[in-house]
Length: 342
Image (cartoon, rainbow, N blue to C red; front, side, top):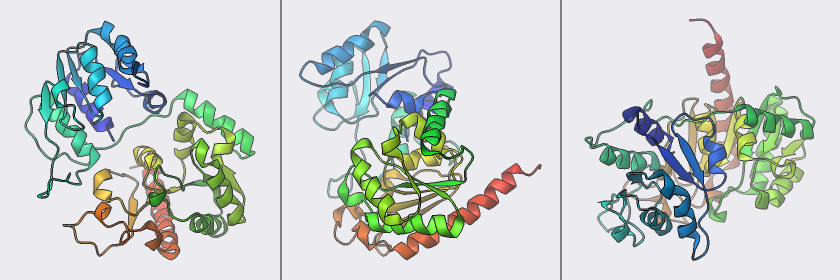
């Protein structure tokens, strides 16, 4: 969701040397994008972590940093690195480490407003560039990712281990999430997998992190149809990009792979329980059906404040199945239209 901001900064500063400081894995996600002259990869851990990371950045003598993260540790890193201008949101007790402090949008009661992360990042770029705050079009806010040759090779290895040809029509299910409350029930994902295989003939790829392998195995077992369990096949972020690219659909909880699918123009069915979808509103060119636990919740309320009313279990299997069927039909029509000569 930060890629529109990366793109904007590069376009506005074509002659500047722009570096990125990312944690391990994010370099693989961003590989192939033309927005950075250098990517510094480091994880700050332990008391001395910020000092060690700052030592990696300091030799470049950057004059400005735009902190997209909200953590205290990243602000400390760039302060130790001696970067003169440090722009970021005044959060998590780090205000004294910043030279330019922005106030995050707040509700009347002082809690944060559900501003989309894309817009949240764009406001930092607007400030850094000295421009006037404005609304950005879907085109300007489109997410960007690339599938590199290395990504394609990693995905080929996954297909080979699964015994499935690369061009096999497929859908990706993403039943995990960093918060158990954001996970739609596994038995419903299993029933959805069975429907998508039997009704549409798709190969079913079930994605998850390594520590979600048991969840993925359980879903595959309950589905009763052939499923490719990606955590058991050594899936990486790069391989996932290539595997998602060209898929007919992704059905997913509110988690990172959703953004990968949107960036690579794959139709989406996204499920939101006790987290408000306005935090992560994104432009999905291939279409996105957002299903929420309580569609009657007033816009003046935030789903995060109503964990019981907005429990993800309230999203029915039937509604998800119907949304997937519609997305598959519209996605096929869009793909046909794009392939026809103008």
